[in-house]
Length: 314
Ligand SMILES: Nc1nc2c(ncn2[C@@H]2O[C@H](COP(=O)(O)OP(=O)(O)O)[C@@H](O)[C@H]2O)c(=O)[nH]1
Ligand SMILES: [Mg+2]
Image 1: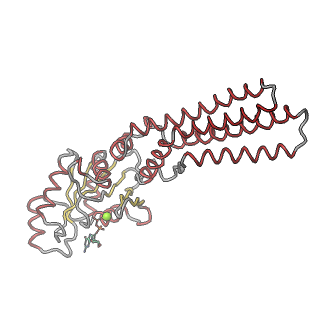
Image 2: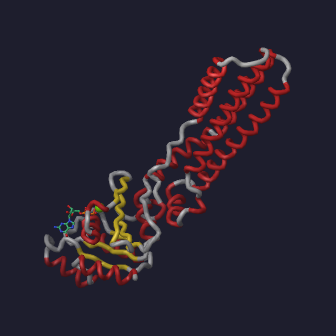
Image 3: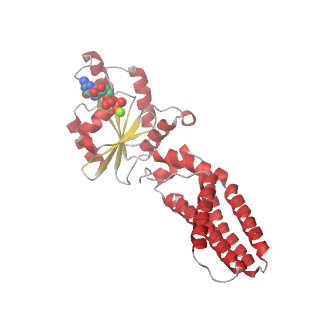
C-alpha cells in the first residue's frame, strides 16, 4: 500500500469559492450566447445552469475525496492497526461519511431548487431563488468544515506510512545506531532498492531479499505502548506484523549493554521467531564481544544470518 499519492483535502471555503467561480464563468459564457425567449426564460436558464455547475462541482470534488481515501475495511490489517495507532480511525470513518453526505445533499438541494426555478413565473424571484440556493449550499459545505480539516491532517499522517506489502516479513530491531540499516543493506544488496520513509528525522526502511522476503528496518526504541511516539508505534506494528525478528546487539555500547538486553527482552515478548545479530565486531573490544556471544550466541556473519532468515521464512 502506498499513501504517498493521496491528494490534499482543502478547507471548506476553497470548495465554495471553486464552485461559485466556475458558475460565474459558466454564466458569462451563456450570456455571451444569444439565448431565445423572454427575460424570465433567459434568466431562469442561466441561473439553472449556474446552480447545476455549483452542485456538480461540489459533488465531483466530494466524490473524488471519497475515492481517494482507501476504504478502511479493505485495508491490510497492518494499515488498519496503523490507523488505530496513529489517528482517530472512528473519526476518519465519520469524516468520510460526512463528505459522502455532502455529496448527496448537494445533489438533492440542486434538484429542489431546479424545481423551484422551473415553476417560478416571476422574473423578480429568479435572483431570490438563486440567492437562497447559494446560501443553503454554502451552509451545507460549511457543516463539514471540521471534516475537511480532519481528513487533511489524516492524509498528512498517512503519507508517512511505509509502503509495506503483504508477504513474509522480517523486522530488524534494536537501538538507534546499532547498525540496523547497515545490516539491511548487507542482507538485501543494492542500496538503491531500499525505500526510505522519513517521518521525523528517522525513517522506516523497506527492502527485499529476492522477491519473497520483506525486511523492515525499524527505527527507534520501544517505550510502553501508551508512551510511544509516532515512530515507535510504527516500529511496534512492524514487529507485531512480522513473521520473524532480527535483534541487533552493538558491542561498542553506544547504548549500554544492560539497556540493549532490556530491549532484547521486550522484543522477545512479541513471541516471534527471534534471531540475534552482533554488529561492529571489527571495531569492538574483544571482552564485550565475548560476553554477548556467551550470553546470546548471536550470529556475527550476515551471510549466515541471511540463510537463517530464509530457513525460518520457508
Ligand atoms: N565498523 C563498523 N561500523 C558499523 C557496522 N555496522 C554499522 N556501522 C556504523 O554504525 C553507524 C550506525 O549504523 P546504522 O546502520 O545507520 O545504524 P541504525 O541506526 O541501527 O540503522 C554507521 O556509521 C555505520 O557505518 C559494522 O559492522 N562495523
Ligand atoms: Mg537506521
